[in-house]
Image 1 (cartoon, rainbow, N blue to C red):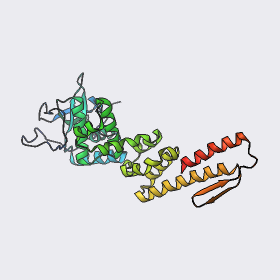
Image 2 (cartoon, rainbow, N blue to C red):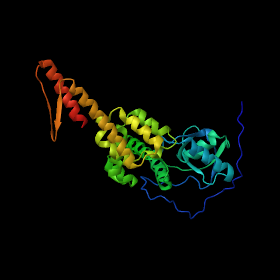
Image 3 (cartoon, rainbow, N blue to C red):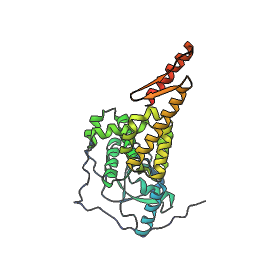
Image 4 (cartoon, one colour):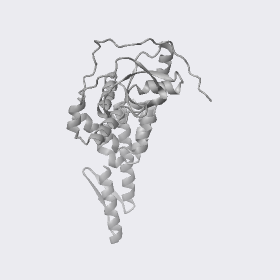
Length: 290
């Protein structure tokens, strides 16, 4: 069954202005001249994702909004691609537009500029374009930094120089991957992935091991409620206090516990050696949870 495409207003674009400067403050490893400054019509089904994408999170509401804009005003900005093999193309910049064309059947072809650049140059240029538009979420950046370092085997300091991003930011971004996989997935499929920021990861960082499975619940609650930093800190404190109370209860089974300023005491009368060893393990767990 053939698709019926919704036609946007006609777009008449032949060449970009010859003196148009490339608005990109980021350093690129090699030059990135267009094969042609002519805007080409490329079949949407021949476009493959960037192997090192600048973004992973594309909320449906964002794609729908972009589709509405294109149907109303036409495609104002061409996407950028680089040649692949067998007549296909790899995307450099413009994934939201491509998704809009595909999901809303806008047209079988899309306006694109073809650039003769390598994979790493395309990756950095795609990141720069998203960064300049302030698109994407902090987890998107974390994935990009991680995937680029994995591909190039370069250090955080080297990557910092390559893409003009501070090393401290790159280092902090990798703390995202201490979250459980289901927490990361929840962020990526959320309609509000920007709700989880570097500031929230900073708050979680000292407690990753202690919070354990509670991390996913905290992230989902943050996505659903769009908490402020102080509200999220309060939620973390509540989760930590629950773990402390559970640990105290585990210790009280061995006898009465008395707590005063700076110390706690437990009567060990009548405890077997096995029970004492079990108690030591519980005390260690309690101390680790504090």
